[in-house]
Image (cartoon, rainbow, N blue to C red):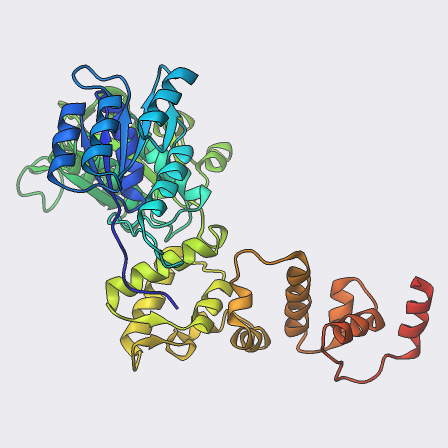
Length: 471
């Protein structure tokens, strides 16, 4: 079962380089840590005296008070805090000195964000007394997960937030493209200015053009007054153009002009207006393939995809991310609720064509119909349960934990696979043996050895002959 409680790990970053602070702060925040970032060792020490931090990341070389002094002070006032030293001037001597002063680890710059996340996670675990195996940090941004694919998304999001470069976010529907775009804006220099999102597939091209670029009075029937478009009203901020692959040639030409010239022209006007807007594109189609087919402008594609962020589908993110997401949505829609092991195991067997959005709706539905404090299989939406074959559902209910064990042995994997094939074959040994690439007698022997017995009759003569030939 998933616990509904979670502990927020407090991380302090001390680095005089703003880019380095941001490169650490964004992915850590997106992973659910509570992060405070300061530009000097003096500020870090002052904060350490005022309150407790679980983990400190400090640069060794800073103008006023260096990282070694930060390590010494935290060791004095907060010995339980885990301090990690960082420097671009890495050497064995500096590493040894930092470790001798009390640092638990040492990271050389330029650092790999996946390495940093791993080091911070290990340090955070050391600060928790007997942590529950299901305990994890949940992200306020809505981007949940610790899988390698998601860590890469966090890293690229951090890179994007540090610059004003154009970003193209790719991924299936429901994977969280708008969440990434909002995070980029939130941690960028434009955070205080507007963020606007528009779905390009929801409007006709004519309406979309007037919505984005605005129009002049009298430019068409119903245009009774001048109206600025979204590019103008979002000036200084960020605009997300979702489902870009649905736009037509005319609008693509206008978008290219905005990217190249930083100006817009209202419908019905001839004079352009300057705008300062960061454009983030999003698509659930492969724009590169559309370019090859001549359905999307190549020059616009290259201008949009200066930085590309690919969001993985939920089915490729692994069990741990699924569990974290389930826990997050249970907390969001039903504080105090837990989920039964067999229900979680069934969710792990789904293909999730609607990705994280579909999972969220499934949990919201389950919370709404749940009769007590435990979400069961019967509480899940019918279309979700229907994704799993009946025989597999039965096997899941009997051995829910075996299906979601993270580190099974090779023998266990073989046993599970054979059970799964048998379940999908609805107990038909001949059909299962055919799928497994063995004869039925061999399958019988395996089942007997593992404490199971055939129930659909004895092997026929052909199976015996095949078995003898194999032997």
